Length: 108
Ligand SMILES: [Zn+2]
Image 1: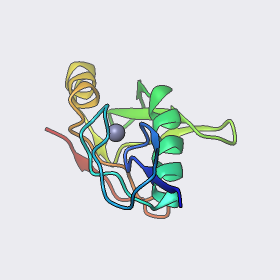
Image 2: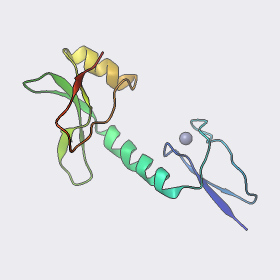
Image 3: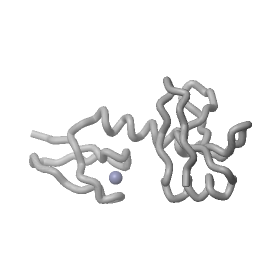
């Protein structure tokens, strides 16, 4: 019997002869049999690949292009400066916003 494991961060798919967990060769995460988590991660990666810093009346934020072609704010946080927003994007010091909520917070 063949077993298939997925990286929960979307890096790779691994086919094994034996049942048992293994680590992702790329990021070291524990592989999971959960294909949905993998596909969500792949989609999120695609979205994050398009991420860029934009500015509106509130401040600077991370925007990205979504699968439907629209561009929207991705980050829950806003930053006072472009530099701070770029730093947050580079070092992953940001969180995805709740698209149904207008709430946001200042990022570090
Ligand atoms: Zn991985």
